[in-house]
Image 1 (tube, one colour):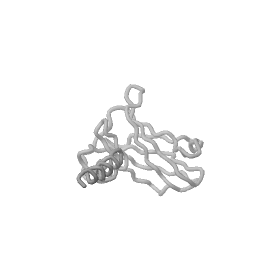
Image 2 (cartoon, rainbow, N blue to C red):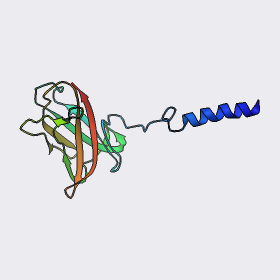
Image 3 (tube, rainbow, N blue to C red):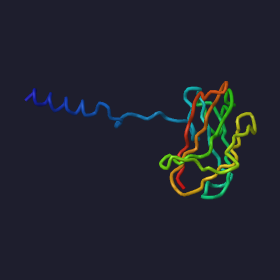
Image 4 (tube, rainbow, N blue to C red):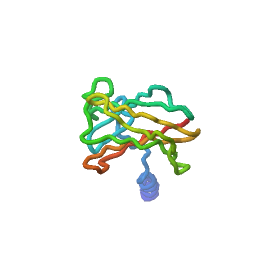
Length: 147
């Protein structure tokens, strides 16, 4: 009986190995839509108008320390440049392919305005934000979107 009990318990133990069930995911600060753990930053995303098919919109990225939150900060500009390539549709393997291209423009100490965001069709999209330094990508974060 003890041997059978040991075998059953061993099966449950090894069945749980490699599974994320029961493990806690990293808890992100309030308002952290984009996480940059390597540099200790988060960014909130506020849309001027909700993303919609075949309409140009823009968003504001507000960067803050990952130890804070989107409402009270502490707010901080990333060290280096912020780049936002045009939205991509991963399942289709293409971006929105429209001009003018999506750009990120510094607006305040911690805010970047992401201009010319365009989605040319319905589906699952991703908007990637790159933090760059010396012309190289230091870290990226991706915001999934469904239209």
